[in-house]
Image (cartoon, rainbow, N blue to C red):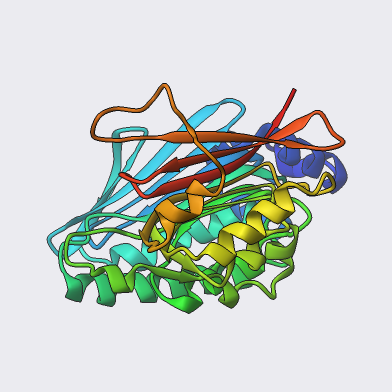
Length: 335
């Protein structure tokens, strides 16, 4: 009779252990023997990550896993007809022939499958896109693969803050529908920028996700290198907004002002990081009276500030307008 092993334990006790040992230990245990590997893959214990970042590129795939015990990084790097795999900056093995993306996505699938507890942050990004052809050829198929991986989970992924790239209207639908809306608080959307992208392509149409429960429940929304469309009214249920837009209208700002001056309005800040056009900007802000120059103003970047009382509360509406940087911010100040 051989020495006792973990597999000799009752399933209930072993499952409790596996659910508490954490990410690194489960990875090590899967390498012990095939029976233990099969057991782990069948029972799917929680790897208890706190943050997860997946960075995809045509020649590299990086996965950064944060957990209470530390950080684990796995990097796939293309080499000739195969690839190298490094973990925590040490080469683990190399494969002379193989599909880097397919094999790395299998590892990502394992991580997504075993993550049951809430992630504080999930970041999906694309790297090293050098041309328009590469941009079109690589990113759309990868987003489709991520959608397939998330669809394969038996339950929605619990995430507090999510960041992902989008450059076509349906790209938000590759990720958001598979996130549990009860836990989601912040959505950040960015463009995988490179110099060939035209301004007209940097559009994120909020209408494409406005019907989702994830959008209806979220508190914060931010865009980077993208212009949001869909109308100001689509954002009014949020607590914090930071977006760029192609154009601003007086009616948009009047709607924001009207809502911020309502004492029951829950939004804390709405910032237009940059706008393209606002023909009536100077005349509109003149209606607020003479604004104070902000202490952050410079000769090449004027910044004006207004503060308006919100009766009967002790709060004030603070409006910031920077005509040189095309920036506008409405925020609620509580005394």
